[in-house]
Length: 259
Image 1 (cartoon, rainbow, N blue to C red):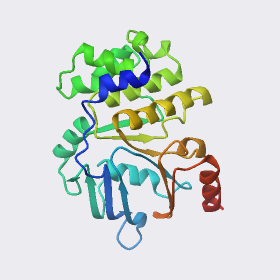
Image 2: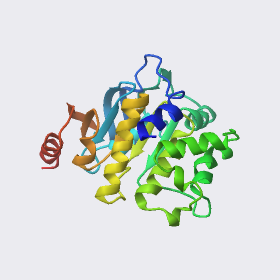
Image 3: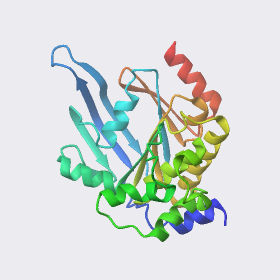
């Protein structure tokens, strides 16, 4: 069975799309420091990421891209403005609601795989759900591993897997809850070019086959060019965007910003 078929079978029932954008930021500002000497990591940013699409966030170091990702995912509190996730305003949500949201509505994939070395791939995928008191069946876990091409690696521990395979386990772990939005922070940053290509192909398949919404931060033009839209930040503001990007488009705009 192909990855596309596995994804259709294993993940289709989950990714909700009720007509709302996946993520909306409405005039969001995030200040750090005191009122008089503070720095605006985000400065009046408005952004709408359509459901079922892949949005990449780029910009020079210190441009605010990681802050944007953290605010959009409810990991960081905005100073002003509104954050709406899958039609739900989370701007003033209490910690208990945000915790539940992160368990059931959001998936996270980071540059570091954050797998537990003593657990098998299967156990790593199930672990966050178990920690949250959510029961997932062994068949669901194995089907999710199969959807990322690792049906034959369920019993392997991280040290027995390549970097690309470990990242795919991390993606499976993020997808087991059928998240409305998958947030990715430099998901290929620790991978060689071959492994990175496989991971990017998997993310693209998720978007095209099951309508997964992805918001990703990256510094790599080749990675950003896999997305549907690239948003460029500088000094905490959106300064450019490109739809259906090519590597040349992305590299040219990024070089212009960094200069």
